[in-house]
Image (cartoon, rainbow, N blue to C red; front, top):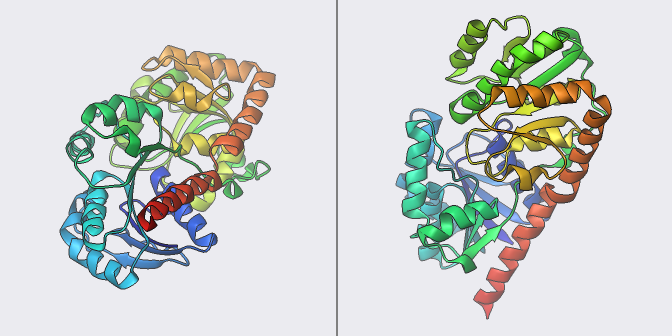
Amino acid sequence: MKIFYITSVLGDSGGSEIYTRDLIRELIKRGHKVMVCTPVPYNVKGAEMVFLPRFGHHALWKFEGPFFYGKALATAMRFRPDIIQSHSNSMMGIIGHLLKRKLRVPHVLLIELISSQNVNLHTKFIHFTERVFLPRLNYDRLVVWTEQMKKKFLMPWGVAERKIEIMPAAINLEHYPVNADGSAINKKYGRHLITSIKTLWGTNVKGLEYVVKAMREVNSRHPEYKYVIFGDGTEKHVLEEAVQKEGLGKCVELAGAIKPEKCREVWAATEIAPHGYVYEFSTSISLLEYMAMGKACVVTDIGNVRNFVGDAALVVKPYDKKAMAAGILRLIEDKKFREALGKKARSRVEKMYSIKASVDRLERIYSELLGKRAA
């Protein structure tokens, strides 16, 4: 099968980027011919790459993409795809919409996140564009991560239910060995580590603030534990100021940017992974990664969290530093529970959130659409 894959997220770091990369890799591994059309300067081995022009900050690239539809069309006409797959947002969907009209082949649009809780102009504008365009774009299937996205947003906006497919996000388990060595991280930062790996902007930072503030109570009872945040971003200063204001310099450290190949060592060295979500959770690749490594996670009860983690993580009240502290303390003080939770987490990812299962689902959708077209 020949797939023309349009995306504004792709790479080795960042949840959406890793997810897209691994979907494409798995499609190629299964023998599909894939042409990737993207503004992101990243090469996927085995795919034919088409790079759209890009200007300014990377957050703007998705909005610039439709203006270079002509380049996408020229390369797609040469490639002659069986399927058009657009991914991540309605801006990529616009390109897929136009290509479908011209090439007359099925179009599948995958949208990762829709949330009404947005803390900055960028995410508010994305929400606005999704609401405007998703009911109007021409796709044969709209793939989303959760039932909540379907029922709370898409159907009320006017998207036909028959066009919506639910497919949870996923990761490639081959990248997450539970026996990985984290000794170098322990040696540098401490024996008992609580960690997060996040890009430091927007809702990520808002959520991490609650974890930082929770560390005052955690530290008062267990000073041997340290919280280390790995990652960088435009709003790192917000967390630095919170650490200083709370007087937590000895038990909270912002370690800065981390190379993708070093993340495995951090996961391996971690005892507890807190995830303080403040947006309408659909799926978090960061959470999946910690779960896949068999780590006990504390997650805030918002959006689809409970359905997503089941009994494989400790769920606590959102927007509440005391609830987050209580969750972390429970995992510190009950080692058997912590270890059992980690084993359940790995098992749940294996059963429900593998990249192979996701590509099985995509192939079924593609085959169904091509079968209808042939008929």
